[in-house]
Amino acid sequence: MEAKTIPLVSVIMSVYNTENSYLVEAIESILNQTYENFEFIIIDDCTSEGNVEVIKKYKDSRINLIQNKNNLGLTRSLNKGIKLAKGKYIARMDADDISELDRFEKQINYLEENPEVMVLGGYAQVLGKNKIFMSKLEDDETFKIRMMFFNCALAHPTAMINKNLLISNHIQYDESIKKSQDYMLWVDCMLVSKIRVLNDVVLQYRIHDQQITIANSEEQKKCTIEIQKKLLKLLIEEPISEEVGNLHYSIVSGQYCSSIKNYERHMNALIKSNENRLLYDKRKFKKECYYLWLLMTLKGIVRHRDFRGLYTLFFWKSLANINFWPYYLQNSLWTMAKEKRIIKSIGNK
Image: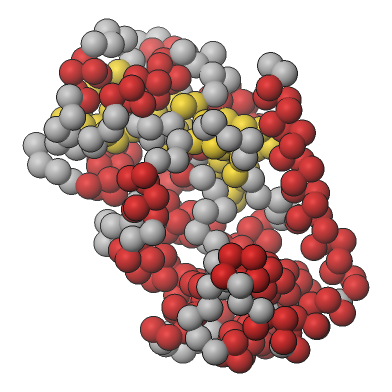
């Protein structure tokens, strides 16, 4: 058998009751990639929307349709796909998104030049809007700190994963996590290897009503809190209470669920614990905590008309740290400016 018959990339996409027009766009965005040496593992998870009939219309030999006998759910279906994958790299794809046609070519080139990277994502543009998901991160350590607070530092369907690094570290999707599967996977990966994000849009990301319902579900919140607790335990060697878990989860949204004094105590405790344990660079960790406090305060004001964040010592300490202002501006004004440049470049293609 010639080496070229072995796919370099295994694309894994689970399908469950997807709008057929979305599914067609997703499939064709993969089949029309500029890089062609891949297998396309599509897992039908007992759909009832005629999705299988749509898939079977494609006679491309790269498609490997797997039909689950029972509904396994997304997490178990993705693990099934990983076990079946023959490629050196695993590319994630969702059945309602659209991959840029040069996505694989760009990601493969990067991973081949950087074999130490386990997961490579990219920017995702929201379909129909001048908005993209992007993270301005200084380095690996900043990424790890952000992951303690954010659950979407890397958009799941943009990921291409080095399968050998995944398997050698005994990592797969945690099947006890029903939602936020990607968040837990990124946490497990970042603890043993490197995660990177390309400075290119690689995916058109679709937002629809069903997706919003899932994102706002209690199950999603519960899973996210459990993952954040896992990261907090690396820093604080004591059980994380339900109250602290809920408080920490709400920091990014700016919707306070406890006394503002409790938030201030929590952030100060994190900084003090890191200074004692040196899990992260002290200056970077403090800078990130102050930046997140500013974000929380602004979101509280804008989204919820809640001004309590302004009346804290922590807020004024954040402002008083003049050495951190270039970082604050870079992560706000710089990010918005770069986002506009990227969207403009896409429109000129």
